[in-house]
Every structure is written in structure tokens, then in C-alpha cells.
Length: 323
Length: 209
Image 1: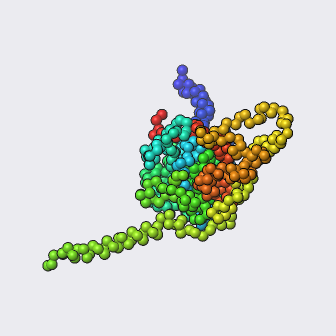
Image 2 (image 1 turned 30 degrees about the vertical axis):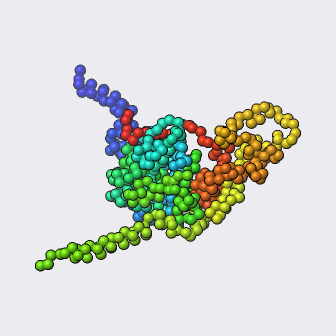
């Protein structure tokens, strides 16, 4: 038979199968997807958004890519990037988030105290933190670690953070460790892009979009207070905390550093961090160090307090106390 | 040329040593968050400084104690007791309630006090007026102010609670100080927290799938 004719008959079949595979193929051919985005909106809508998405998304992402470091932005620029991020979340995931950039309150320096006598290791704080801060469910990222320690042990380094049994266990006590928001924070000095710094109210924050993911800060922190996103964080839309802060619990990306922010989205509005609010035993005390009438000042004045690895000179704003 | 004697060496080292010592002293007194908060003695105007809605939706009563010179509030208790007021049944008349057997407090487990001297109902509840508690000294205590009752024995905890080292504040670190009542966390009949499973768990740091 004529080979040319054979070819001719086969061709339509091939193109049919190609059209059916349109979604899958776009994963590999970004150039084709871009052409599709510019050319045919119908094709895109049929596949629920391509790799690069609509022209609006493209332009938003373009502007996001060239924005400044959070500390160099004017308030107008901060508002603009927040609007962009809200719109991007709506386009990509169809979720309405409320983001803000609430500034630190004058005359406030946040401090935290943890009662090692009262903590029973129920880990309610850990669960509340994961939910509030939109932490990655896939890699089980957690900001807080609770160490189960025998009486007489002094450092969490010898404790057990992976206990899985009914708590509390006799002759044991529990010690929570998270970011201590050091006044003299070694992590901020290690950052080559100045993507992390200490805010005037004492909270050590990360500008996720300026983080290059080098993890120098992670190595610099003597408390293992920082977490790295090895994969793109996965949070079910139903469980996502919609009220977000630019420096706090907004969605991170793959390859960005993150950490406890004393729930900046809550604490700057006078609310308690999620871990404090969730604690069923009242082992966690949070407040303003500059307010002589605050609870934290009462604890520091009247209880026996200590700080972990105080000899390093990091000057953490996180105290442990005993009853 | 004259070789440097020990005396000359000392003369050089001593001022340098003194300088380092002084610098060290200056550094230790002026720096650090401890010094920062110790220097902060001016009162902080919560309501004015914090630009946010700090109102609570829960009911609270003013505590009859002072907290660092000021007032504080605690959440109410009576409206959370299912069958309050108690005098509906306990009113010196024959009890004529349907299902009386089921609601006659049979579910209460009393694990409070030492093993040799456990507490009984009337250690806390008033015999004469069932809507109230009564202290060892015969003072009637409203159930909203139950801390007065608990504080008889647990005076150390009460002191910590009034200051903020025991118990917990509700929702806000700023604004009007509203704290949880003793009985919001502790069951007064068996106050010790139960042994139970943690809410979540921590996976090993290294991924081993």
C-alpha cells in the first residue's frame, strides 16, 4: 500500500489523542501553555488554569516578583502587595483571605513565660499552632516541640520530644520549646539577604519573599527554632486560617524559611497567641514586658525563672518558671 | 637598648585590663532585655495604645481581690452550672421532681483532699442555703466567687492566680484583665487533671518512609 496514504489516515488519530491530553501535556510544555494563556481563554478554563494561568495572574506575579523588602516598602506599597496576594489566593485556590500588615504597637515588647510545673504534655498548643499558622500538613511541620523529661534533667537536649503515650507520666515533667525571639538574635545576623529581622515589639519575623532558602539562620539558631519548607506547604482549604499577616501566617512557598511569630496576626491586635489560648493547664503566660502591671512581669518578679542557654548571650524573651 | 622589665610590662597591661573590665561592666548594666523591662516602670495604657476591639462576649464579674494594685475580672460560674439554682429542689420541702433518682448527683465522683481526710459535700456546700458555698469560718461564698472557697487551702495557688502565674487569661493579653475561674479548668469534685492521650504527636525529624 502507498505509505503516504497510510500516513495521511493516521494523522487525524494522532491529533485527536493530543487534544485529549491537553492538560497533561501542558505540564511539560510551558511555552505552549503561555501561548494558550494569551490566545485562547476557552482552552484554559477547560483545564482549570494552566501552569502560568491567566493574564491577570501573570501580571500580578510579575509585580510580586519585583517588590521590595518589607522593611523598605511604604505603607502604600505594603497595601498594594497585600491586595495582590489576596487576589492571587482567590484566583489560584478560590479562597478569600484577609491579609493585613498591622504595625507594632508603641510601648510594647512581647515576652513569654512557660510553667514547667504545670505543663502536662497534652500538646493542645502544638495542634492549635499548626492550625493557626497554616503549617504544612504533609511534612508535619510544627513550631512547638514538647519535651518529656525526667525529674532532674535540666536541658531539653536530653528530653524526649517524640513521646506517644498517655500523659502526664509520673516522675516526668514537660518543657515546651519554640522560637524564643532573642533580643540578640543570631539568626538575623546570619541572613545574607536581610530577609529576617527583629521588629520593634521584639518579634523576630521573616519576609518570606526575600528568603532565598539558604538556611544559614537555621544553622545559626541554637534552639532549633526555625523550620524550612522542603516542599510546597499543603493546607486543606477548609482548615486554612483566612485571617493572615504579611509577616505571619500567610502561605509560604517551597524553599522558604518560617518560624514562630508569637502569632503576629493575633498579638498585634491585643489577642493571645494560639498556643497560649489553647493551653488547657494555663502553663503559658504571654504579655507586654514594658507594662509593669502585666502578667508576664508578675511572673518575672515573683517566680523562679530561668532561660535556656542563657550563657550564649542570645538574650531570649522566653522564660521558664516553676511553681 | 634597654630591655623591658617586668614592671614596665605591667604598667602597659594594667590600664588595658582596667579598660576591658570597665567596658564589660558598662555592657552588662546597659544591655539586655532584663534591664529593658526593669527600666520600664511607667504604666501602659492598654485601652488607648492597642488599637483593636478588645471586648469579650463572655459574662464576667469583678474579683473581690486586687491585682498589682488594680481590679481584675473572672468569668461567671453560676450560668454554666446546668441545674442552677440549687434551691429549686433543695428548698426544705419534699422533693417532687420527675426522674429525681437520675438527677440526684449520683454521677459525682469525689476525689478531693487527702486519703486520710477526704472532703465531703458539706466541706464546701452550705447546708442552710444550697445556692451558696460556705467557708470554714462560716462565710457564705457566691459560686461566681469560688476562688474565695478554693483559696482557703490553696492559698499559694490563689496568690499566683491573682497575679497571673496560675490559671489563664481569656482571649486578650491587653485590655481589661479577665481570667478563668478555678472551676473553669478544675472539676471541684476531682480537681486533678486526668491522664489522657496528647492531642497530636511530633514526627521524627528525619523522614523515614
